[in-house]
Image (tube, helix red, strand yellow):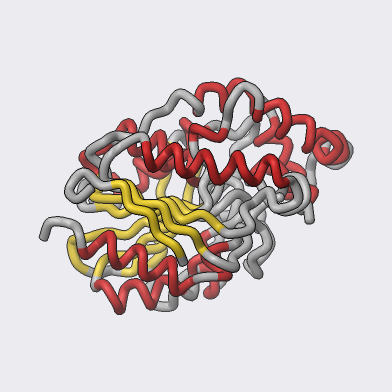
Length: 308
């Protein structure tokens, strides 16, 4: 593991049906390299036990007419929120939650974004603004308003950037794990991503009721303008951030795109204070699966540097 600090205080195998949800080996793919349960249609029934730590309590939150499943492992007044990669539900973190809670004493929250896990399906294109609203509403209804460390994998990096921009006072820090970051989505890069995934999107359109296809279609709809806007988002200087980049990157099959992914992470870190770049050596895009100890270490380090 290599680590590059930038401090003020001291100084792409395509998983075809989810290609645009995140960027991985070969061309583009989802972060579904994990062994998580397949997406479940939204329902009023609770998730299976493995979708959260055994000690977590389930809270069904309503926002904008749909319900979302939040899982809370209660601890102290510090809160760690784990936000899964594209196509994943809260079960992505099931092995990490109990370790985090035991090691830090913090309250640990995982949740299922709209359309995955036990949360309701929301028709239409995937909109980051709606995802941010869902997360903010869930935390508000749970009474979480400050001392939040946000841990975001892959596509959740987009949610994290907008959330931090709009709610910097809620956050005491963030860990961005091989995350989508604004510098990557340039006017040159976006058409490359759209072109690379067009065959998968066209195939998905033939079976739109398949849950995985629905995810792809909703994300592809409006992808270019949405990510042109994302490129302009700036992370607030007041929120410390650790960026973990996988050694293989999500675009391992394309050296040029892999280089751009790494460069974007470095650019993000260099653009502001209190930011650290960490390389997860030997890891694929599925860093939480491949290097859970590293993820745990970086979360603990972030909490240790927070004011008590």
